[in-house]
Length: 598
Ligand code: ADP
Ligand code: MG
Image 1 (cartoon, helix red, strand yellow):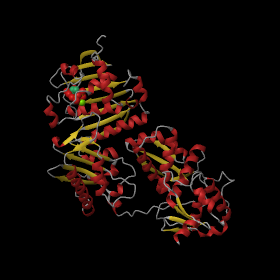
Image 2 (cartoon, rainbow, N blue to C red):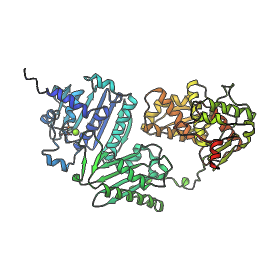
Image 3 (cartoon, rainbow, N blue to C red):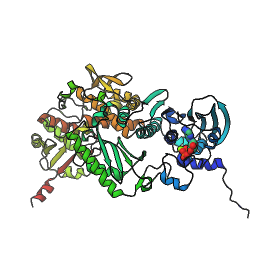
Image 4 (cartoon, protein in one colour):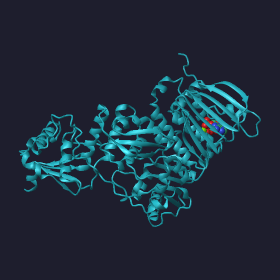
């Protein structure tokens, strides 16, 4: 038999290797931004079209390349960053594998302009599907511009695999955040489809963070600084009250490289022990400086995991540094000299008492009025009958319970009361129901918003004075995608302005002082996950609003409010689980009670 083994041609090998390095537009963004930083650029511009599917361009003012290097840069294993394997343990650059450009050029059409300061003219190279198409000398400024068009044009399977523009853009923005936070000394900007999403002047870390996440963040930042033989740690954590229900603002950098580490995250969680509400996560932006030989990082080009030699000590150091800072800020909140005084709260705001938020419940409001047949009348006893029917009709473990009740509903109705400002207790003759008021109300609101959206049956209240919602560039992008859904749940929205939008009307179940929170919480949820289809988008909006606007634990309810809430709950399609899948009530049957008194 003939020999059958042949070496793969370079362009095929590159295309295969590209599968590892280039998974989606965001991976190209990461590689190009890192190359610009390695080239010592002080100004980097990222231009995106169609969430990177059409164009990803990075323009830098860095060192540039000679005409020969410009060509070589696209060869596999062509790198200026290491010469021998020992160099791997003393890396000071982001790249070193010399694979990125070869991989990108294998699966896209690339045009590069590059010029060193000592050269008269710039080199222009066009390369597509791994083949150099053209090389010219042209006039261009010092630095490098790399345009990557039509990613995966020659790998249809991969191109089809790309997610919606919203999702791909989200990944690109994440990458842009990671790189730009790691390098506040560099000026960055980002344009998507002609709109400037970020414009980040060079400055310190605090300024970089407030430019990205909005000036409100400034007050929440607590500096962390610790120098030990194992590691230097610096950066910021967020005050406990700024903790969010999502893991949006969590950034670790090791030697200026973004990494993920559940282990370091855990150290931080223990430092916040007792300071956070249940289900909330702290925010942090922390930089570790370690000897390169004590870490094992980036063996895989796209990996962000990291291994540390001195794990245990690092854990202890981090926990105590964070604890210390959290303790310090309570005694001396403004000890940080990097602070931008312009962002401080003005004096007339300092003594301004913050009113505790009021929960306004419209007692006459019944979102399910349209379903007149099974809605509850003003007489109390029939409501209990339908309550049992509702429970009885749900196909679940509760059925047996309800069946076991030898209830006398009319007897039971007067016996609702509130326990610990948190549970509604009601007896039903033979069983006891303990209802979590917050979860119950979340369920009620969630179904209300869903039905508003699907039936386009919303009632809004017009505001005398419009409410201004400030939007950072990322939130603006979200806003564009969600404005119509928000209108469907009852918001009346003005035109989108440079950095804000005015709300002129709000849903009738939303009180005025909650409107801003609705937007903040929605953006927060969106920064955590980007639903891809309309159904999940609707679901996310309804859930997020239900959480924001629900009656909270700790709120005392009047008897009628208790009654109304129970009625509303048992008029819902689902009565057992909150929109976040938590149990709404527990019950104790007669038999269970009897056992306890044995
Ligand atoms: P690596 O970054 O791992 O060295 P790349 O394929 O990303 O590999 O780049 C190959 C080489 O091309 C780099 O080592 C560098 O010399 C050169 N290069 C790439 N991008 C730039 C840039 N923006 N400015 C100057 N040189 C660059
Ligand atoms: Mg590189």
